[in-house]
Length: 474
Ligand code: FAD
Image (cartoon, protein in one colour):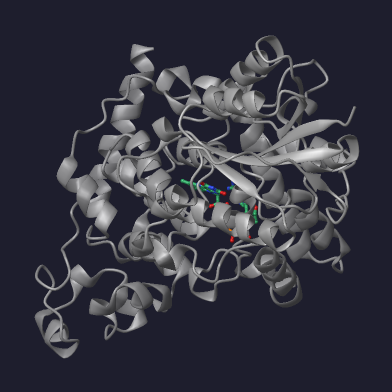
């Protein structure tokens, strides 16, 4: 009897170097290709994050179609999808997917594995694909998980990484289903909001992802260590978006980088890839981190319920040019430079003393590269509540950060046109411009651009006090 399998795509939207797909192709005579949208997980309003992700699903559907393969995109309850498939294909025996190690995805995978095995009599093959090293692969000599990045990184570097694998779909025979109300192309189209088109037009697909990798290696990798912190240079890879959708595999990225000539840029970049694995491990080993501070001593911080400050931060109207330019970059492009993510997260949690979860949730809606493990990890780092985070008393000074990483204000001017006439040396603190200068630069501070909404010196003292108070309540 021929072997019929289902290949369930999730955040691995590609046909090259996809571990689950490779196993399915190797072990099946016929494959049904599916993607599922859990309507309960959809945000009420379309977000950039979801819109751009579904555009990538649509792109996968299109590229499979070129190979005469149909990707069935289902909606509603996940169990309903599998029941429906089983009803139509009673001879279906195997399910292949790349599994999640934490969060909602991890729980869903466990539930559905049990359901398919016990109720539908399906063999489930859940493989590891998303990281170079899975969360549970790296432990200390004493058997515990690492809590600090540097020793984790040292161990990570000693381990052999898997190579990319080649998959040949040319001779694959696919299964078909009859039309169902659970599966309609128009529903996928409806989830892709044209308003967010900057986030995906011309920016999606496996080919695009590979091109971005090769351009980065050719033009930017060797200088990466020196330039990566300067937002105006645009010296980072922008691969995060493709790693998040799975349009490129982490193994292809790693192999490409390893094959490039040795340089400090290359070593620094490899370390950044390790941060991705590290935060994946932290989330898997601290599953409650999406709901509360990892460090118990900081669970009692009395965050300010400052909706106006939060709105100023979101829209880029805090009166701190580097913060505002960063937030406007996020709002306009769906992406933000790493140094700026650290600055705005520090500003929200320390200068405004607003709960990091508000910021995490805003990033979740806006980022095209939204990844729960890296995002929660980054926010807990900035809020000093994570395992290996910035100490609570070492608070970023947004003005000094601005002077250091955008000395000429080139990045600021790109996103805050109101400030474009102000010379570099004066741009970091526009509120200090004399009235003569304001006239000279055609700007009225407090009218065309806001005065700082907070005094950094006072805010710093208040934040340290709030963190110390939380420690005493523990
Ligand atoms: P590059 O500098 O080119 O780095 C290459 C790759 O290494 C990235 O694509 C990413 O996969 C990985 N990487 C680099 N830095 C980190 C890091 N600090 N943590 C984890 N992985 C890293 N990254 C996300 O992918 N999704 C998120 O939702 C996310 N949220 C963040 C929130 C905050 C508050 C902070 C401080 C950081 C966050 N990061 C997140 C990490 C980092 O900012 C982005 O990965 C990076 O800016 C993406 O741009 P790039 O691909 O050009 O990075």
